[in-house]
Length: 327
Image (tube, rainbow, N blue to C red; front, side, top):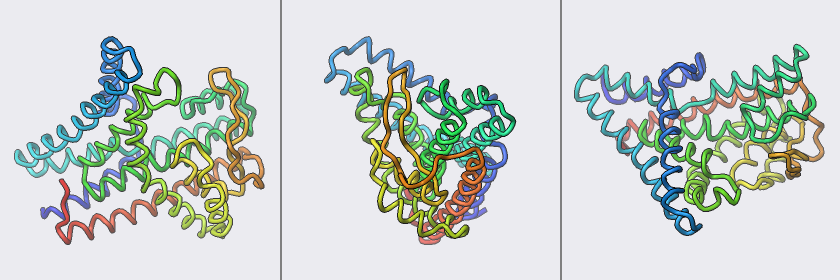
C-alpha cells in the first residue's frame, strides 16, 4: 500500500476502535506503563532533591526522559516494524494511535454516571463520577453529579480526543504519543499544590503550550456541532464571554462553548480534599445541570467528536498529498 493509504487507514481505524471499544481494562496499554514509570521517577527525584529549585530541575529531566523518551521509542519502533513488514508497521501504528485516544472511554464513563442517576443510584453515580474528577463527590446531589460529569466530559474532550487527533494528523503516531506523554505527566505531577508546584512545573507549562491550539479548535467544533441543534449563537456568546474563566489557560474554552450550547452553567462551590473552593461561573445566566442534560451533553460530544475526526482526516490527507512529513 502507498504511504498515504497506510496513514489515512490507520488514523480512521484507530478512531473507530476507540469509539467502539474505548479502553479495555485488561488490554496492554502504554499509557499505564508510562504512568508506572513516572511514579518511579517521581520517587527517585524526591530522594535526590528536596529544595524547590532542585525539584524543578528534576521535573525538567522527567519531561525529557518520559515525553522525549516516548517520542524516540515510538519512532524507532515504527521504523523497525515497517522495515520488518508493512502489515506489522501498519498494525503497530493503529495500536499506538488507538491507545492515545480517550474519547470512547470518556463517553462510557459519563454514560455510566447518567445511567446510575436514571436508575436512582445516587451513591453509585457519586462513585462513578469520582473516576472523572478530582473534587470530593461524597456530598454531591443529583445536580452536582450532573455538573461534574458534564464539566469533565467537555474539559477532557480537548486533551482526551481532539488534541491527540490533531497531533496524529500533523505528526503521526510519534507526535500523538509525545503529546499523550506530556498530558500524562501533567495529570500526575502538574497540580497547583505545594507538593507538586516545583516538580510538576515544566510538565504543566508544556501541557498548557501543547493544548493551546487543540482546546480552541475543540471550542470551535462544539459551536459548529451546536449549530446543528440551533444553539450556535448561545454557544458563541458564552464562549466569547467566559473563555478565560478557569485557572488553566485552556480548560474554559470547551467548557464555555458547551455550557452555552446546552443552556446550563458550570462552576460554583465544590470541595477538594475537604476544603471548600468556589470555581468561577461559566454561563452564569444558565440553569443548573440536570440528569437529562447528560444525554444532551453526550449527543453534543459525539457530534463534536465526528466533526473533529473529519476535520483532521482532511488535514492529514492534505499534508500527505503535499508530502509534508514530520515523522
